[in-house]
Length: 346
Image (cartoon, rainbow, N blue to C red):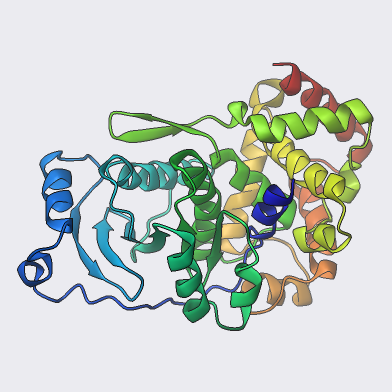
């Protein structure tokens, strides 16, 4: 559980600014690759004509020999040199981008590529974090395994392909909505959606996502239902990860994330998807900045450099649910819990 608590801690969405690091990709490629093992890797990856990969070239970083992979929407800087994983990374990120867009009634366009840093080991990741995260570096370095989103970039290291892609899919959603949405999302919505991208399967160079097979979230949800320790819906809608983690109770942390995951699935799937249009309208209005918020809440919603306070999350989380989904919380909670029991049985 300690490992997963650390993973959960890292999914708090933080400030949205530009990012920078050592990128000497303008150095002549032939000069870099002379007597460099990357030459073999680059040749092999290029020969496979991967559907999502636009280019691959050396990346001279301060953290180890690396590669820069470019796709339609991403620049991926990595020191991972394993061909099996490298050939899947471009397809994973582009598949995730496509599914992020499917949360909306119509897709948005990314004009400036999103940055991802994937390191081969924890030592490289910590060295990068110490220079990249500033005053927050010590907090991130307490993470046992996983990824984080900061300064416009997703930053992770190789913890095995399955878990690495799970973390990248989750953090990639935070990156996507922070880039495109005028308003930041309340925690139940932001974290609940991010968990839809934790489980995926590979096919023909691309990935498809399977939120219904997220056994970790479903197992936690099942235990909560068995023990009857679920968080009441009205309380769930006003919670934030920081608030839950502050009380240092593993059960509360598990309940918040598993129930938020189930709530998003409920809005998308229950009763043949009857609430899906309202769910997408909620997101679209957040993207455009059309939520009916008071002046104070609007200011916090727009400015990513301001902390998302507990009070703001409490005010906005419940209000938006009532405005877009249903104002009869007791009735909708009964339907939601019925759906939760259904998906853990399945």
